[in-house]
Image 1 (cartoon, rainbow, N blue to C red):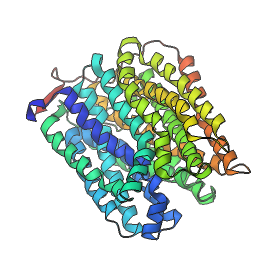
Image 2: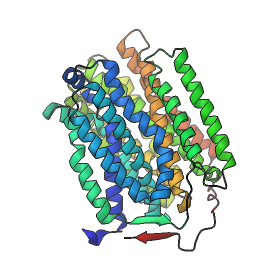
Image 3: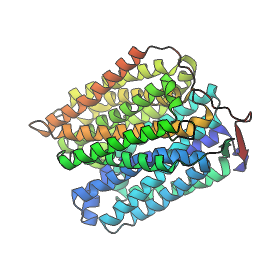
Image 4: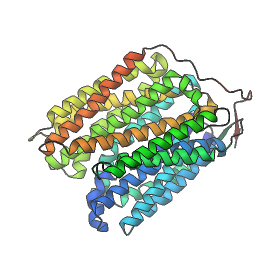
Length: 469
């Protein structure tokens, strides 16, 4: 086992497995909602907080966790996050009431926030720029696979073993990842000292918490006055945070503005948020249609959706390799088209009397598109990021992904409630990701294909990294 220590592909496998576990838990629980309600005698609001609590903590703390990784060591934060996530998963599976489950899910979100930004930063530190596209392609395929396969795996576990195994399954995986972390992943550190921006951490956490909460809960409370007040407070704290960061650009800011001089990083981060909303907006209505309109069980609905993650898993590494050879923008544009075609076809097929197998080909197109989108997004965003800014860049990138998913979920929920029938609401909801895909394509076309300049380097020691074993 220790012979593979420091091997880039062994490091990538370890990081990707931990990353997969955290993203899977954002969607796998959805399919278990009815069983959780019956087992714990919980109402719908309580069970929705089982989902929302996890996403809220994860979105609010990713930026802070990224900077802590720079300070304390990214491997240390990754291992701590895995341990915390695994223990919280055990607590979720053993929960005897909704309050215990909600609390354990929040702790799960904390563990996920600690480890997620470290994965991208360590990949950047481990792989040279010429091979980084392939590596981030594999990492990106894990993101797409986890998001899309949640309903399939969740339906299988709930049907065969019960809802508690949606959480128990994380225990052996978490223990394996923890062991592999200390066997294979070296403790890479930049040759720089870092200072803690406590004020910035508190401001960013408060701003993201308030804004994300308002977005996630707005539909449930009909966007009443206090929801808008929370959103406004979050936005105001965000503005204060950015002003605070502007004053600290020479003193270890959480958000180094130098990153945004790289046009590709800025554009790809915005597109990461857009694609996060697209994936949620595409899968949630289609899953509801299969279960509510066609009467499929959770297991059969999950299996009907399986072609998309399977194709995505196969395509993403190839897309990452192509990103290194011909440029990520071309691969990304090539992915937007099949996803839009597949989703449009799936929307047209959602009618009374449809057969689940008729969605197979559209879902394959969507999987092809996902595989071609996720890899170049990560590759192009991080291509010119210097190693000493990788942690901050990963935190920004993952925060954009989480906020995009939250906004997409809120917009999808709002659209599902419109119309004179559930089917009309599903059609309206599925038009949202199509519109977002069109906007993404226009944005890529409008910005052209000129190479972005690398972000400015801060002087560092000649040996950029030291490895402690």
